[in-house]
Image 1 (cartoon, rainbow, N blue to C red):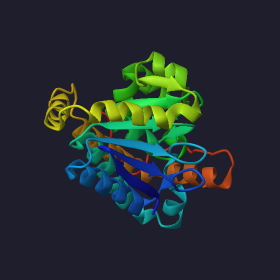
Image 2 (spheres, rainbow, N blue to C red):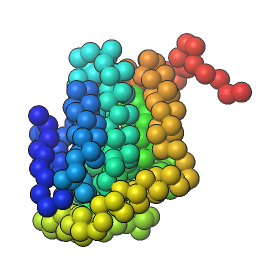
Image 3 (tube, one colour):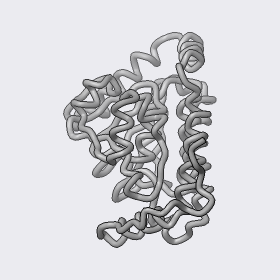
Image 4 (cartoon, rainbow, N blue to C red):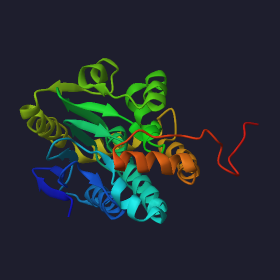
Length: 260
């Protein structure tokens, strides 16, 4: 299993542990969704911390799985949708501890959480435009706002921890060695509060979001699937796996949407 799970003194911890880069396949995204939902129902868990082992937090979707079987795109989309929704709707607060790279689906995890802490070597990005895909702009926007999200999505360029903190998407930046301890300490502070009050606070905060996060991401996924069926998307994925520059024809895919 790609996750280590523990519950201690009201704090549940999910640790991504799939070397080398914590890129999750379709089955593992579904497992993450179930873990977050089940911990939200577990009376022992008053707060959930999501952290990771290895070089970085999460590199997103396992592109090699899709290269081997492109038909799995619908299962991957469903898994990501369910995982991000389960984190966002988890009955208790979710604290995300990000170190190293946080890319693609990693943005979906962090952007669905209640609070994000980051190590000083953390970076956040959506490289999807260079991988023949789209997605998680909803969650990036929760972290960094409209203008920065548009730049990051169009260019594929990441930002560092200090910029993420300046933009308000990260609560605190710490040395990498202190990150997990700080996340557990904050979780412990929340876990000491009234369980009923915290659960109701989580529900009320979700209810006053300026956008419907779950529906917004579902809307995005329609465009992800549309792009995925295009020749440009295939070329981008092939180029990434073959470690070469992509060559695009610039033609719209047959049946692609036109502006009204």
